Structure formats: C-alpha cells, structure tokens
Length: 301
Image (cartoon, rainbow, N blue to C red):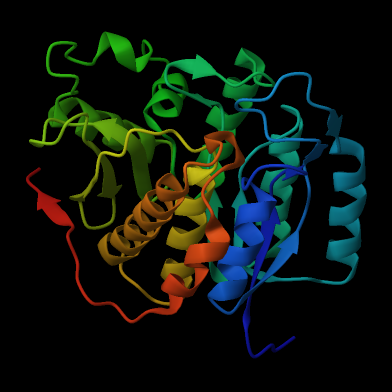
C-alpha cells in the first residue's frame, strides 16, 4: 500500500513520567514527518532511572496479538526500531516483526537497552543480555552505549578498560569492539557515551563503524555536568529519522548528536530535575533546521 510518508514500527516501553522510550520516540519522528506505529513492550509509571518503586507491566502477551493483527493487515514499515524490552522473550517478537513487517530496503535498528555507567538497569538480567546478543544479529544498525557494548561482547565492564588517570578509553579498543559488534551482522555499529581524551573535561564521543565501507567515524560531544535519562533514545530516534531521510551515516550521527547536545544544554539552563529527561518540547523544531555545519571525523583504520 502506497503512503505519502514513511512509517516506523517503534517497539519500546511507555513510561508515564520521563521523556524516554515512546514519549521521546514519537515526537522526534513526528517532527521529522515520519509516522510512528507503536508496539509497546511494557507500561511503567515512570522511567526507571532516578525513581524507586515504579510500577511495571510486561506486555509480552499482547505484543504477540498486536503483531498477529499487523501481519493480518499486511502492514509494512520503512524501519523497525526496538529499544527497551520488557522480557527476554520479546527479542523473538522483535525479530518476527523485522522478518514479517520490514519493507524491502528498509532498516532494522536495535538499541540494545541494558544499562549504563557499568551497571544493568533494574529490570534487566543476564538472560536479557543473551536475548539481545541474539537480536542484534537481525539488525542493520545497533546503538549500544559503552556499558551495553561490553555486555554484548562479554567484556569486563568499561571501568576495566578506562584509563582512570585520564578518564578515557583508547580509541583502538573501541574500534576493536565496533568491528566485533559488526561481526554479529549489522552494517552499522555505533557506540555512544565513549570517554575519549579530547582536551575536554570528561569529554565523550560517539564512534561508529560502517562495515560495508570499512570506515570508522567519530563525533565529539560537549561536557555538561548532568545526566539526563533518555538521551540514548533521543539520539537513536533522531539518527534513524535522518537515515530514513537519506542522510549518510556520519551526517546522521552528527545531526543526532548535535540535537541531543542542544537538548541537554537547554534543559541544564532550567535547573529542573534531571530524572525527567531533556526538555524535548523546547528543541523539537531544531530537527527541521537545514544542515549548517558538520563536526564528524573520519578515523584511521
């Protein structure tokens, strides 16, 4: 069925409080003129970072019914994009959606949500790690943070690889990890929140590997002394949207990183509780601003 717009199947949770998962995914894609078709994995009273005693409802059963209905309707999507899963069994549902609902030439994006800062999220387990390790083999693009990359590769938590004196990790180590992640199957492997020595206090970067072109890319991110949950969802949503609009990998990751940085800087200026996430409502129009500059770098092999 022809549509004058692109569609994304968004397989994420829905949190009542906090700009994460679907509450970030939907407005970002909508701002880019792309329809979001949610397949909720769980419903939570709040997002999990910074909140205790949150309510959590696993939607594994209804997800199968939703997907069966989509298949009956012969729904096809330009992208299938998964994030937070409510149970290890949901990895198979995501894989089934990719196999049955992704258009020819579409892109399967898996953000393997597991944890951050060297720790698993409260609802995650090693069984979930195994499930996501399998799921990334079905993806065209994956976007783990450094902790999630270590878990997928069965490496020690990042603290073991980070030079504590300089608070950085060698780019050669990250590039090795990217190649190994791409060996699982994806064409694009991207690691976010990488502490690299760049002359900035606690500076971080996003590193990517394009397996088809055998090229590494890097985008440096400004240091801002605050942690906002949901920035990974924001980055991957914007990245996927820009890729669907025809941007190259380095330009898409550059634009997505600049958007996240803008959101963090605007939010930081208001001195509001960081656990509610970045104030997307203030910065969504920036997604439609024409490309004015690029700061990405091509790294040597």
